[in-house]
Length: 460
Ligand code: ARG
Image (tube, rainbow, N blue to C red):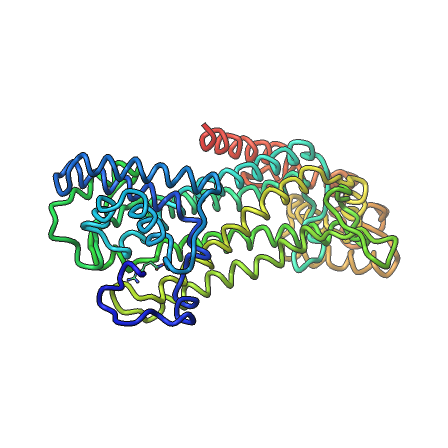
């Protein structure tokens, strides 16, 4: 019999039960649901809404239920619809009449809003840790490669020289923002909706602050209609996770390119690559490809929830039960991707020679050559045109800026002197970009110190 069967003359159709029930996926909220009920019932006891003795009895039974679920001794059925009714039904089955007092001054609407917030708060902290570990891995790679010269690209065309450390620190900064975004999301989410009731609060003299404090919330929600119908925090989290996955997919894409024969910049560890069922020579970057692919899935989760919420009138509507699966899916996906991605990064081999070779082709020091002329007094635009002509000449004569003779240089501009070779040396090009944020060893060190400080602050 349903907890709400009083008003009905017939049982629900089995097909309805199947569609209506959320227990198949919201059972994972059991811990939050029980902890929320424990805080609620303790408050009911302290405020005298029910007797302290009754509150104690309910509390003890709820703990027993919690342990039984944790030990796998309790299974849920469709009959009880969702996690909230399942636990309440089990409570009453165990302690009889007293159990029926738990739901005083509460609705499943504020209960589910509470459960999701509690659940997401915990998950955010776990995902935050995983991102911090990834940042530490990037930092470690940077540490080993502050002098590893590689081409930096625009339009996937070799553009200017940089180092692998500079590259790694770019990603470290992207993931640093992801950590901050999650913290920001958590801060806004940190409000207890309990006490909003079904939608307009309750007539009982409850103490919302007491419950919020007991559950570790910073504040209570300000409006009961909003309290039960707000899912902004879930949408924010899915947005944050989408951005995080977008970052992971960009690095995945680079890794896929880098480990191709065409680039040959890195080699993935055997433990983090896969083979082909037909082509014996293949070593594929499946992990990076899957992470790139799963990004689409997390975007889909965000779109699903945005669309569920679009145009919903206040307050609770059953549509909102559809918030859970996309949330769980996105969180599961992110939690699966991050550790394996970090391990893949950690164990990959960087092929310094190939990077260096790629850097010595493609005229990536052409800007530096133009800057050389500017230092000798030319206007940048004139210098740019001269170097353009030199590059054109090099291409048709099969030379590079390094192998061109001084006479040849001087035929384009008399300003060139023997020190041009020093100026276009890749190491010089990199280390003269000592602007904050740039690739010089010194600049990258500063960036690494910054990230180091960030990690220390966030892990203390
Ligand atoms: N299972 C429901 C959900 O996930 C709980 C809230 C149900 N409230 C209601 N009025 N039917 O949204």
